[in-house]
Length: 374
Picture 1 (spheres, one colour):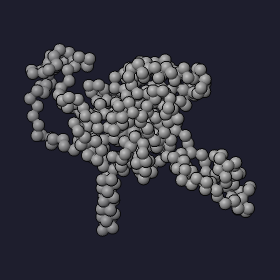
Picture 2 (cartoon, rainbow, N blue to C red):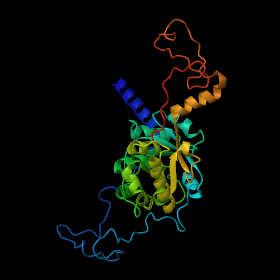
Picture 3 (tube, helix red, strand yellow):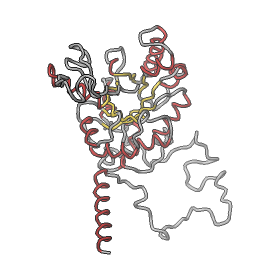
């Protein structure tokens, strides 16, 4: 029995330590009133139709039938007088027209790797959730390890979806990238699930984003100011998306549109540089300029006119690039045994490459790092 009690105590202490480490507080149900302590003077009488569908209660602001298009919102959670303070550093740069970069956390589930990436000089981290099997709990744990790193947390979700977007936003993301937006209706759906009323339809369900470790203490309060601080990027990746680009970019609440370099080639059948491909990119460009939203693309387009936000390389690609930069002429100069697995014919053998090639003077042994999925 003593052994069991000790095991239970140890488990409880470990659970508490993990909970403290990931700062998952701001439970919306923590302060519910005790049953039996409330009065309901305006409640409908038991067993009777109150007539509320047609008649407003005394003192109500909204009269007549309930209509979401004409509803007059109450003062709760209204932005501060004079407008929301902009506390998201990425939005500060977006509004100033400055160039913004996001490093891609492509496959890591390690908080240490994530935090190293988040403190390496980028503006935000593009946590890849579309082309990766990492769980949202794993993503939230990485973000919680360094919520106020130099680069703010962000995510590319799988598609415009309430659960996907809630997972990202309640986890603390300040940059939300929604891929393969094909129509104005899909853009509105993405906006609605990203923004609180009255602009959108996001649910206020708590989560670590509301905690003091994240954004619970921001000027004006998270709930009242996040609509003006969330960077919402909609990716245009298909022919149908390009056809609707102007209407997509015009949706209120959209911060930027992303001309997806890889998937526009995938969906169009043309390569970058060809007239048909470049026309598609230019249509997205024109939609952004017309509607005064930012224009995003891969970091290789850093100098392309009017592009100001970029997806940069993955953590594995950056490790490889950093090693090559640090080692200089010593990069990939491993010894070459004549026997064993590294000898010619061995399972680890890679033929030497010419100097200046990707394999360097001695050739490489590892698999190539994945490029960002755009």
